[in-house]
Image (cartoon, rainbow over all chains, first blue to last red; front, side):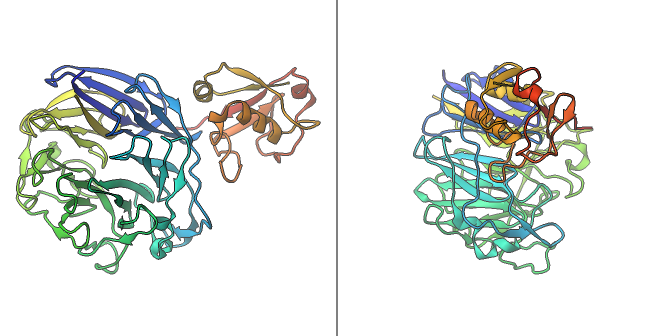
Amino acid sequence: MAGVRILVGTAKGGFILRGDERREHFTVEGPLFGGWEVFHLAASPVDPERLYASQAGGWFGQIVQRSDDGGRSWNPVDNAFVYDGEVGDHLFYDGTPQPWTFQKVWHLAPSLTDADVVYAGVEDAALFRSDDAGASWGELTGLRQHPSGTQWQPGAGGLCLHTIVQDPTDPGRLTVAISAAGVFVTEDGGASFDPANRGLQSGEIPSEQAEVGHCVHKLAQHPSRPQTLFMQKHWDVMRSDDGGGQWTEISGDLPTDFGFAIDVHAHEPETVYVVPILSDSEHYPPDGALRVYRSRTGGGEWEPLTRGLPQEHCYVNVLRDAMAVDTMDECGVYVGTTGGTVFASRDGGDNWEAVVDHLPRILSVEVQTLP
Amino acid sequence: MIRVTLPAHLRTLARTGREVVVEAAGDPPTIRTVLDALEGAYPVLRGTIRDHTTRQRRAFVRFYACGEDLSQLPPDTPLPDEVVTGREPFAVVGAMAGG
């Protein structure tokens, strides 16, 4: 059935919101895996009925589930994320060495070209790949074993690999982001990685031109321009037009350039969305008003989008994986809040309405556009 | 045959009832062999009770039998006779935690 399917990961389970072609009526299914953290739900671009869920909890660890029928039924797949070779140390918050220890899967990225290939970004930061739809996982060791790995330190949420951007023109090129190590790029499918953090300046670290140590929160890319990447960093909104070779700041006239989520309009590669958050300790929007900001100029000049969003007494956050766009003729934009609301815009951000309220704290939002 | 009781989340995951029965190796069977048998019968439970790599009990999981906490005992500790003979279950418990 034509329409959209919104995949929502929350602190207490997953939800699937099925919307009609006009995106006016949604059914809410869930919670899936109730009581567990569902950090991310993701769909295969090749086979829209194939979904993955990262299900985790403090008691019983990590589970990965797969659905082959659009989320109507699920089966656990392999959950053994075992670091390959000598595990070694990274740095803890206090600067002391700490052995790499698997915590959970933050982000799942099904391949753009092969329905059986899926990538997983995990904490402690590493990249895994499955070639059999999750039946087994292997580490792409070139990342974690990069010489700088011994110097990586966690961000406040942990040493997490939260972003995996695939180049639609080159399956061997992946761009990943780690808090608080930075951006890394592979050109050879994960055998080797290079840091891609030039131009990032982070006042929190001693060297503002450091090769690693940057707290990158999220990357976004328009598929028609794989060399252009947009970044929400801890502070600063950035862009690169050479695949991460050099970054320039595009925060421009934003009221604050702290935030987590960032995304790009489905049909306008220079239209970018962010959700400014007051500060790194005040994780809510300025003035108690939830405003999505849109730039139609690739950054620099931003306009607040407020119609239909709460404009008073609103102190929620939009986490890094909780913004998505659909590819309908008029691009839909979706954000999920820590207050458990999914807001949707059917017109590129001009008008918003709540699709569902009162879910648990929302960790991730993805949307599928179904033919 | 060893009776093993599971906490609710693991029952859901393994798609089974509150209690399962497994055949544990060894004479007598041990904590380790009953967990091996459990994971052999229900592979989806691998990694949920013990860490995949270290085989250490996960921090918020406890083992009880005959009213005793067996959690801190070495994995090769023989199970009590009451468990071996099936009069009492070996209980896998999710620790009470969360505030």
